Length: 319
Image (cartoon, rainbow, N blue to C red):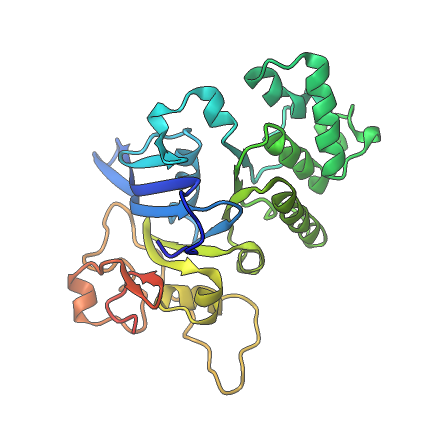
């Protein structure tokens, strides 16, 4: 995998993940994640990007065991998921949700929301759990005046801070961030991103960041996984991919962001068309129906994910 050579055993590894859903009205299965493999190393951030429906959130659900893979394997510390007990799993990986209000119990105070993971997964007393919760809430910027308030009494950014505190209180090594700032005001987004980066350094966390915001992904990620139609389009070092994207889909995504191109370096063509229907997937490369450089080979053969300058690309004409 295209990660730094100084990393030993990955904290998290996905091998050939597949997720299919039965769709009764149509009488057939649809594949939303198709042969996806990646690794997450210690104290690094893997950004997963792609349009809605590309399989990003489904991957997060499988990593959190909310959904079971239809095929493929998941490992934490080189141990299969099936061999992990509940406590080991909860202390290994946690999640920050996109909906910073809906993910919080409206009938519980902030201090209780944050201390609950310790109550259910440790032998600490209720008082010790509350003390730890107070420490973590303070670290995310919520002092004692906020501890006994209900979720509706907080702003969106403050609610997300509660969600972050709840995620890190068990001292996990891996945190999945599912669109952690997309529901927040622009003025608050930078504060939350900076908080996540500070906590990553303090607790040596590894992040799996799912986001539509390429500026956020570029700012915080070490590696990038570009998804299209349930498959990997491009995977590798974030710096290299943002500087020289190889896949035409990655180029189109980067072109869709508000950025100023150099005068002597024209932008790649804008993304056109719609994502194919999962009930009627196209032959060959799934992106050929929207690709400006598609040729007959693209319409006939599925491109293999291959190494190209330390980046993995699924394109017949990536050169």
